[in-house]
Length: 77
Length: 343
Image (cartoon, rainbow over all chains, first blue to last red):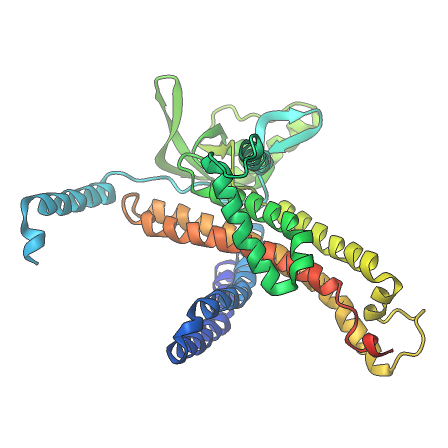
């Protein structure tokens, strides 16, 4: 039971923060693009970079989940 | 709506739906064995060195990049006739401009080579997961052997198709008793100095010859260590002893207490750099590969298609982020400490 629950919780809880973060990031970028369409290209590049950084936090949670799933935590067997 | 009712689009739509239904009902793809470390290919080794499938992929990606680059510069022309040279010049110019915006002309010229090498290598290494057949052509071995060596518990039946052997969709799971028995037998075989082989294999698993190189943590950690250490070497070369100052090394006198904390934080962040660089790349590509596996397993027709597009984007984006972060680390290493300019 714990073996199944723990990876799910790891990725599920770990995805909350980056989800909110990416939402805020895109909101800010789109507002900026709407106000100043001339620099839309530059903003888009930086937005994608920012999304990748925010997403990488979710990826850490995913790596932990995958480790729990395929390798298992020590002492859980 | 009326456009869709013409015979040709209508036939395409109905055909697509029919294929979808057929694939849902009859065509089932076995879920590949998902393992975190690179898998050693059975029966392929140099001496004691087991060759893993991610190693093969690394070499392949190297060869692709080297061959493309050599072909591009074989006959250099002022006004390039060859398409490849044109493409390489275009790529070079785009990224050199981008690096100039970040770090200035001199630094961009100095490190655009490192940047493009990392970018191209990681691009081909990431995109290798998208090549059809790359995860489904390999060596088949009994699931018992795979369990004894790697802990795989799910195998599949096999079928002979002419000279080829293929896995079928009949799933075989090893029960707890069987696992115990296998463990014992494998230990006995090892004690006797023989290679363990079951009398009557219950199922088989497949080890692909090639698996995308960046789905192995060894490659990504190796690359991350390389670029972070390299950035320190560059820092020492350009700034000399001043560079050590940012880590608040005790040999340097005249420090304020706050500098010590900043130095400790700076020191820790060097390890965080290695971890975040390597895990970002590995996590994205590995998760993408698992995603593709699972989608093909659920419905083998049409459903995986958008995810291939997504992975195409993710593969480029991660290669780009790795390379641009490398450049940013190099660039940061050559900044002297903010206060030093006034001393």
